[in-house]
Length: 58
Image (cartoon, rainbow, N blue to C red):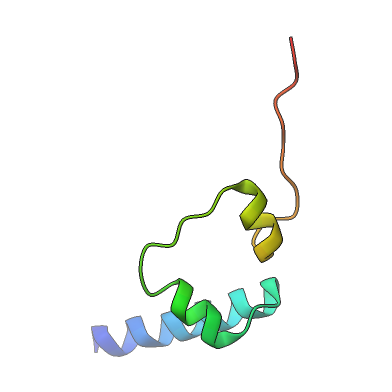
């Protein structure tokens, strides 16, 4: 039962990410299968964030 729930949640999350980022389901599945790190610029290009905040100079 727990495995079915995990699969259902993963499928739902993948679908939400694909829709939000405009990436394909296959790419989202591949990228979320293992550790997948990106910097702020890469995350913006990927579509997972909208804006990069930069600290103000003092």
